[in-house]
Length: 372
Image (tube, rainbow, N blue to C red):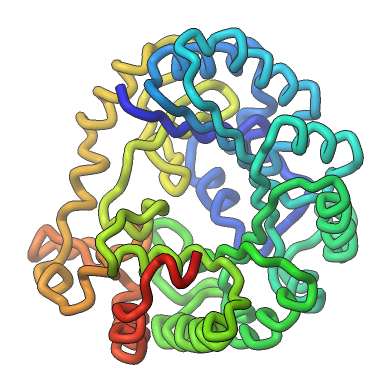
């Protein structure tokens, strides 16, 4: 078996923040059990044992939520201990943590640095925008100040982190201010994730939803700012742009949403249940449970439900598009099914058309070595 990617939810959908656009709150509300509470150490052991003993060469563990740090630092220390215990084949192990940063303190920073975790820190733009979207769950109050303190602490300890920003309508409309603010703070590694519409609901109706036109304009404006800094040799690392440049040069994309087809992911809820993608953790997509099933049985179920196969069913106009070489049809989560053709088309296709009509040739002229 090749390298394995495992995403673990130690605290299920539990969170100490309340974010207006949270996609996982939407998913949790649409399944039989909203939250599975805290993951037990026995479940953690089973997950790591059953994945690590099957991996070859490399394995990655990412911890997400909800808010994973709610599970406590001892849980993560135990995860490292299990990794060492079951690394019988001496493979390379990578750990990552996606967090809202609310509980980060000196002990967390020491642990993250010593164990070489890559941290994805959720932060939404300027203080004003962030606090309008991301609230303290108990008080409803502002959260930005505490998160900013966490970035300073991680800087002091030398913890590697990326800023993860959900592109809501507010972010899209103010991206110049956001970009400038991130530059001022020295946040060189950035990821921008398009805000998801609720599963099974009409696009563009949620309060912070993106329209295709707005998202297209966001991509154009952000790329213009990035390109300006690229010419000075001072550009931040923005994963989406880096991947598009790499794809134009014949390299593969690191992010599944830019590969055009879904990959093999192993996403584990707190009770040990496994799902094929973080965006589809609903009852009908459950593949098994690491407390009961082996990895082979879980992967067999993945193919039985045809999860990956459906991402190959792209609209013919999409596949024949001039820009498909780089665009690849976007993320399956943003695609809509056409009953007449049995194929999918991405809701943000007009966004990508807008963007690539302006910058496709520019991207083709950039080589990865120019932006690394």
